[in-house]
Length: 165
Picture 1 (cartoon, rainbow, N blue to C red):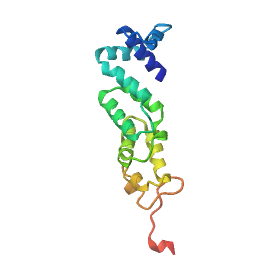
Picture 2 (cartoon, helix red, strand yellow):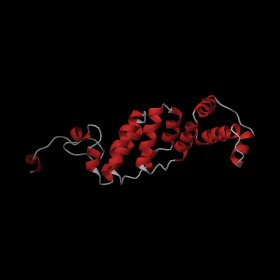
Picture 3 (cartoon, rainbow, N blue to C red):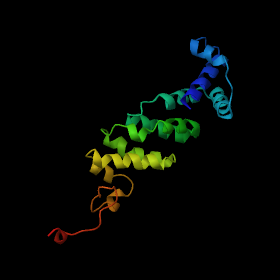
Picture 4 (cartoon, rainbow, N blue to C red):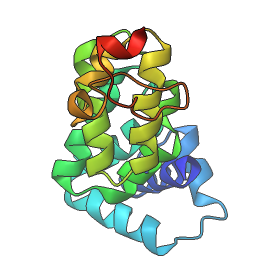
C-alpha cells in the first residue's frame, strides 16, 4: 500500500509539472486502480491530501504522539485509505511506551479507527513494560483490573487480605 501511495504522489507530481526522478518513474507502467484514482482526485482537489498520504506511509511508528496526531487528523478528514496505510504498519507493536500521555490516548484512537487488535496489542504491552498505572488509565481497565492482572492478561479474581493467609 505504501508503494501505491508513492505511485499516487508520483502521478500527482507528474500531472502538476514536477520534473524530479520519482515523478518520471511514475509515468512508466502506471496502472491506475480505483483507490489510486480516488486519492489522485482528492489530491487534485486538496494538495494536502497528497501530503497526508505521504505522512501515513512515512511517519515514524515508534513515535506515539506522531501516530496519535496523524491517526486523529486522518479520522477527522475521513481519509480511510491513509488510515489503512498507517495501521498496516502496525504502530501498536512498534510505538515507544515512554510518553504516558500519548500512550493513554492512542488505544482509543486505534479502536475508533477499527483497529481493535492493535488496541489490545498496545494495552497488553504496557504492564510488561512496567507501566501498569498507564494500562489502568485505558478505557474501563481501572475497574476491570481492580484486583490486578493474571499472567495470561485476564483480570485477577477478587480477593481480600484474608485470602492471603
